[in-house]
Image (cartoon, rainbow, N blue to C red; front, side):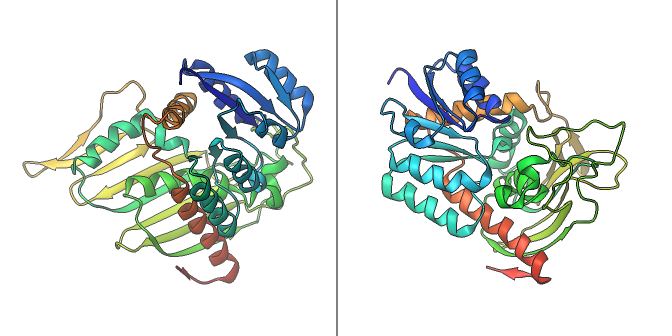
Length: 352
């Protein structure tokens, strides 16, 4: 197979990252784009020389020349479109989260097994260049068993509004939008242990704070200052069957001095700071050593990670490698996220 023909479903802001990455991959031909907004889809088709434009994803999936699709739609449509694409014989890259509920996730997993097609979940932070470096240290046993991780992604004013602020379409706020990234990254580096229990809290105290002046923040295309049904922030303790644990907190809106990102993992032989930049901590000759890997991108490069993710997906479609973000990982992550929301709603720890 000399060229993989790709269809894009959902032409919102995140789709640009997919398009740029596909455009840079010599093994790919962008073949179709679908969006409810036909004008936007036509503009994208012109910009990226895409021959086929649709407003109904079923019509795109009926195009026999399309071999694989990127799904970049609202979260509440991920499961439905993923299943339809798999049943149409397409391989799928589905943006995170896989879907909204565990029931949906299990249906997607069943579709993968029934059809024999491949689904990769869009956990882009797994594909950052600094993670590739860190993974070599972990796989070599240099950090030992990782038994604790701590992740924090705090925005002081960062509710994008629009569909992000609509629980029906998004499934939730910062926990399912940005929290999923750091929870998944820690879980992945910890060796994907089975979740045992979660205890979580969500808070809806500040809203989207549309009253704030003189401070710019990202707004979705359909931003509505009067509408918000998602949490401001969430925190959780996740326990795993192997005894490891993960502590996480995330926010869209918080009375914090500044935005902050911190992701750390701790093992028996060493630890690592991932955000804001990769730093490995260990000891030699009874002395603590901080190791700063000399790499071009010590931190998270957004588009660079997307390029790596898309290249990984393309090679997985071509049978050159096996995806490192299979549907099973998507199911486990939805269990964790749903468990945190359930714990917060019921005021108790949730056991699996």
